[in-house]
Length: 510
Image (cartoon, rainbow, N blue to C red; front, side, top):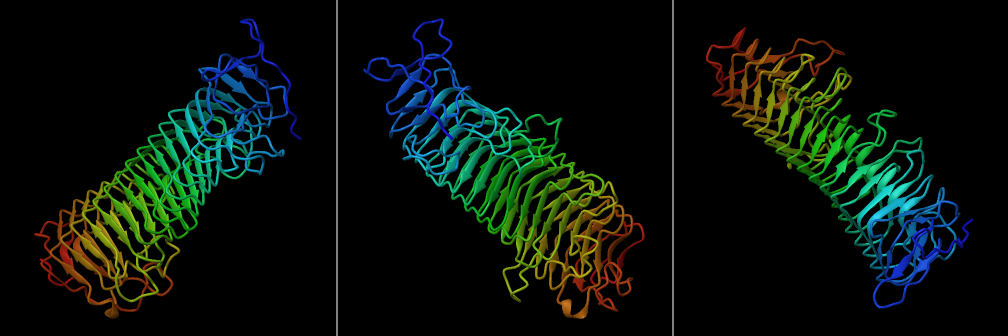
């Protein structure tokens, strides 16, 4: 139950309370905890409402600016600090209360909360709320707390502040056109579902730009929270952020569309980017992802996504997936251009079933100008097409895909592995100084033709430069039929440099 506090602010320097002065020509006025503000005000001291069972302050009119003026407002346990609506009916953040306020600005100070409160609650949908240079501090022990909660509103801005010790730093619940920019956000682990710097549910064209995300009290529960967690959203932009020491830099699940993840730095997370649940039309470009315990990028069941110019370095550990683990699972194609995988524990790129199982024609996947360099601490290959996990014995390669101008250099095992490739174009790729075969084609069957393997170069590899293989039996790994069909090709060169030989079961090879 909410109770309006009755603590008057004293107007002396020795006061243990605080004073708010109405902005503009209005005379100074004393306010108390639980006050509903209807005109712009400036705080001239700390406001301590920790002993009350009510929100510290309400915003009860449009166009109000609350200038904290470097001071702090503290709420009672489990209470919101500021509710951006008239006091109205009782309710926690995210529940219906009074009339929302539009055009509110809260700036230049500190908001303290404990328990399950919110720093700023905009759950009633006030439009164009701005939270500017505000530090919001939770106690790190709460289950449902949030720095800024935004419910079904338009135009939220959270700019150049800090948020720590809460479950979710900024909660975008049906938000439209929100901007979260230039903040330091440290969510706290709890026993509830997830914890995130920014949590988004059913959002539309929201921007998360230039923030630094890490985890509050990481020694207690290392790598637990997310930088961005999003679902059922469209057009989200995650740009120029830094995410360190968390579970996932960006976790996108359940039918997101048009997500843009660009030019971020992600260091020391469990995963850098993790897409799960038929994401479509996403662009992941220009990110630097390093030192992930698992994959730098993992993508399950997505389609029509584009990966361009990402650099993944030193990702993976024992039992992990590849640096890029891309498994559309037959839902649709993928485009990968000019990406790097370096020094990965497992394979550099593992691609599985990157095609649409519902159609027999284009669009097809395209892999152009990618580089797998010195991957495979565990003995894995540079590129693998067609086998994502060992238990997936029926996995197909990327039907109809084009592999062009890719480079595999110095990987522990093979440079390129194609498992049951169907009607693919493999042209102009280079495989050099890999520990085993340069190009390995497993179980190429007659109806997979035409498989075009042309003008590739394989030099100084430990095994064959180019080789086909069918040495499995039913039920074993890589088994797709009783007989291998020779790989058709032309213009492929090994120049007599490979360890076992240049060519085996691959035509047009010298």
